[in-house]
Figure 1 (cartoon, rainbow, N blue to C red):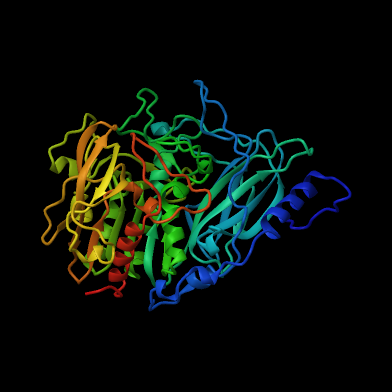
Figure 2: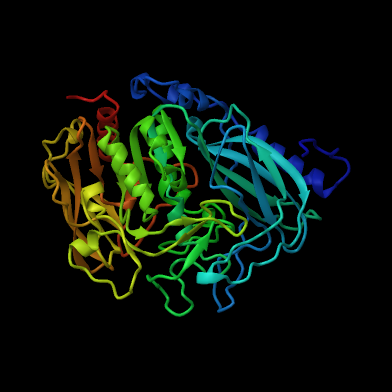
Length: 524
């Protein structure tokens, strides 16, 4: 590990990059502005409130990817991987005090560095530089063979490891990988690795990242996702598996976003919520899908969040969330097409648990509606509608306006919304359909999404009471977080001839109302 700068009078590849990083990451950052938050925004937490103090640290002015290069697909056109520099982490999440390994490949072999950023608000900068690692001598690491169920599981040698400092706050962390050029006129290349630092402290809000779904759609190295059987373009059947032991390739669904190289789908669908929560001082802690296989973590928090594109769950996650709701935890599904595919975790080839997911079936909402699959699955999960409040629909891809149908509900307090008012483009690109038969359930918003941009399909947003004065809300759209904030580098999507407009004060107020009620600070 080296942080020193070589003398500027003598050019070296190591010194050139060190000087560049120091200029872009060190001297150009400014303290986070406390004045950008109002004290009335910050809920009164009953727990140790590390998020407010964490966001007083300096924000990084340069944490995004600049030079992103993607190889061509063997079948022609743009591929998914960046062989010039790409990597992955040994764990989805890690606690402070434990170590995480970074596996990196550079082709051709060349030196590289790693900068670790925690993602948050930080006075509007969006990230904080935590540490720099390297430079390291890179090498070409081997592509894995195609294994059972078309899995591509890398067994790369660690390039370095990092013991997480005890004072690192729970959050989503990006490691920016940057090659070091040999000459001034030679380009550097960049990509990310992503991991979550979790903790075990009681917190108000538990933010579950949707990393199972990031991995399900990951085609690295080329056409090896849960949707690739080697024959169909969008396969939705059994006998396919994916591994967390491989880099995240370019995002392959509804739009081009170069920031997804190595970062999964976090920056697309989840970061606007994390940025907004931390801006307003909410007491939030983070976890991966794999951290919700037992109820322990959720029971130490007041509110559970399912975020963005949270499509693939292990059945144990379902039972965990069911239990924490039954025991009084609130749940907000700020998602669409959530809890849809049954993907049990298994160990990797070395025995490390929860590093492989395999699609074995669907959750039971579609079957409850009489929708049959053309594929034969070995498993059907419980009815997701009885957990979230509304069931999935199939096929589902489209967009529409989020239209209020119960404006007198407390969640719409101080929004100015009336029945029939709409928030343009907020529904998409996937959503939830018919409400489940749950005592006390209310449909608070509903309308028509145009599947494929032309075919009408009904969606519903719902809320129902839990057994201990808690509640469960279903926003019925992947795009909910798009209405909360637009962090640095954020790209709004455009899909199926519809698009959200970005931050909307009404979406922000509804979310405040839901969270404040869930934390015991709302109007009764």
